[in-house]
Image (cartoon, rainbow, N blue to C red; front, side):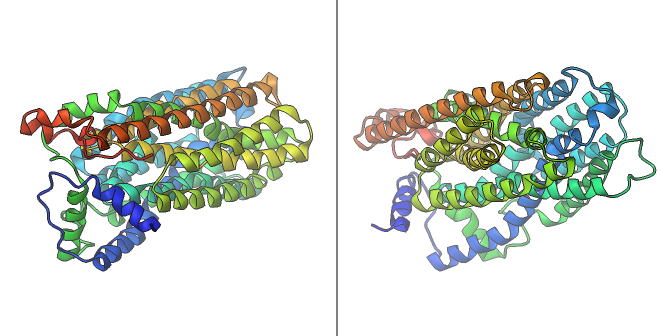
Length: 484
């Protein structure tokens, strides 16, 4: 059986209780998906690239003198990192619910505009209180970005199509590291802008903030609205876009707003993916925020510590996209995760056990390659196993929200007195990756077992309930097959 036939079988297993009849050809649908890819993905990828740059440029500014110029003492820098992720975490679920009300085409560019303005304002702060204020506001503005885009894409793409598309836009996080490192090194070489207070690192925030604001304004015009009425699709394409997702749905998406909260919070898939996302973010955000510091601790200059991050991020980005494509083709999430996680474990073990600078630089490559693909795969795994759309929206926001607690841990394991080797950080992240490996294995076993029960009729008792209840079963429906 071919890969495409396997994916088709996965789709067909979910096509129950549908009143929609397919009235289009495979060629028409293929052309539609191609058109969606070329219109949606470039826009959300660039906007998320700006999101990640504005979040992590504080790491570039740190090695360029931010702590000294703001008079930060002791753990005040760590406090600034923590407040960002606390507010980031709390804003995600409410942001996705607002997005459902006002529309992604309006809400997502508004978020980008908000954190672009905050980034620009960071260039004029003068002390610890200002640093805490802008980091808190940045967390509020950025929190809704990843779950918002993930949900937005799920309204256009089928379940098996989603993993590759989500990874494309999330790969912007690793791409942004390369771009951010190059941009930061360039902005540190030019003369400080005259109207800014002392500190050449301020160039980074001011220029990158202005770029983000410009991208947000473009987003208002370029990000398509709901598929039912967007102008970039013609009438026939809109019909196919709506119909093909209706065929895949297993319930009518009515009167399930409140049920969506409970269903998302009670799902084993949601919780396992959320915990894994938390453990993954400890490494992703840790390496993103502290890689320049790690490299400077190896003896590289301020400029070189920015530039040497570039090949690491590029390699991680290529690997992430390639692994996501493989996951898309085989229709599985657990196997790619079982491949990439041991790579991170090996890298962290080298960082923990070796003092050789060359070995440590190579280990950073392994860590980045191992951890960067995990986030989009876990997020997609959770949303693949969440139906209907309200449950999926809450699930995507909840997974990212729980995952956002990971960077708070990262903020407190990279301690100044533990530099330059950061034994504590490496040991904690090594344990986290080992935990991820165990949880991946458990979730694969759980989903295989559950699908077998459904196949054997072990969940058919759920169909004995009133019709309106059956129509709201979603991923609990006996004919729904969990992605493995």
